Amino acid sequence: MKWNTAVIIYGSIFLCTTLQAASFSFTLGSPTPSFANGQVPIGTATYNAAVAGNAAPFNGFIGSDVTGPDFSASWSYSYSPIVGTIASATLMLGLYDADSAAPGNQVALFTLSGTDLTTSLNTSLEALHGGAGAANAEYDILTITLPASTFTALAGGTPALNLRLQGPGLGVLGTTPFNGAGLDFSTLTINTQAAVPEPSACVLAAIGIAAIGWVRLRSRRL
Image (cartoon, rainbow, N blue to C red; front, side):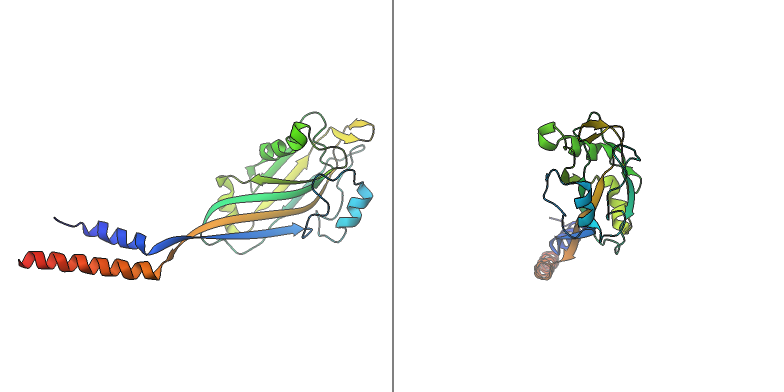
């Protein structure tokens, strides 16, 4: 029987490596959520007082439900480039007064370095409370799974996000023409897998290759 050297070498490399998982998390804005998920009603003054110490755009209510403009904010991360293959990633947002219980879709645009995530965030907002949406002056923690199309931007270490909401919003007396809101934090979590050497497996693989070589040499001499 003839052994294929390439197959032996490939097999030894496989035995010498194992997949090691790692997780990275980066938070902008409030280090922890400012309110309980689903808490209502809060009130703009209470919200602003809770987030006043954050950097923009996480430091206060943006826009106005009644007089406009609609909520609009951009923010960017800055971290060391990710080493290893990104297996999955999620983005968690703390949104106050998104008003998804109002008619229509309240997310006008949501992107991550050019990748359109508008539908994903809209779906999450509309699904709150069994499909009823978020009530007026409600605080919600939303998590969306990021598609593979964002992984290149995530690996680079400087992903940029842009979020714009749209009316109608909700007021005390009903719907409003605009949709102001507050964003108190944004947490990005990246999970990776990397092939790393497994010393004990390498030793076993080396012994196996040596044994195969010895058997081949002996069979030729007989």
